[in-house]
Image (cartoon, rainbow, N blue to C red; front, side):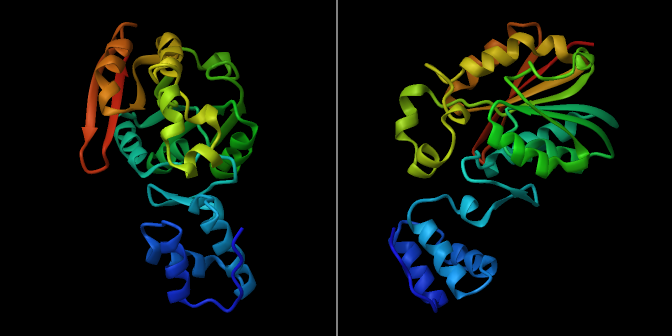
Length: 262
């Protein structure tokens, strides 16, 4: 690991970050400066960042839907494009919504959606213990976070009651995982990235059970890629859900929505 001796100036930070390949070096330098308690701490933060650790893991948080979400090392970092999924979910949620956030990671999606609704019953789950610990801090008193595989740890009493089912499942095809940037490939759990042969394996497992958990008129929302959208929509529709694809060109985001008929 490269070592930097304090004191460090803004210019020095920018130069070091840019040399390490950080595209938004100026913005990152400002964030590191604001996060450091002292010059030695700043040097430590810079060393970790230029070594390849994701900025969010260095800072300990990520901005998502205007919220500061705690993100621990080894936990999937919420992407800005996924804010589009939360926006779509908020538009579908009833006045008092029962929300489930599967593959919740840091709990960012559930926390953001719950924060935008007047009244919510929130449940979230993830198979990764580190993610569950992080999500419990982020969700706090807004809901309950369970550890387990997909629907398995959820209370049976939720069956047929879920108004909004968020499932930010992994959707990178197995052969493409090694092509991801090192920040994701090295520092985020593979289970949060690898979606199987065509990237849709985990989504299929969610879709297979979703209708049993959704309330009449309730909706499943999953993020996918543009090239997978048609197949994902077909898969969601094959279970009797009314499926559609919504796209945000601004955020480069693609979401498949499946709604249980009333």
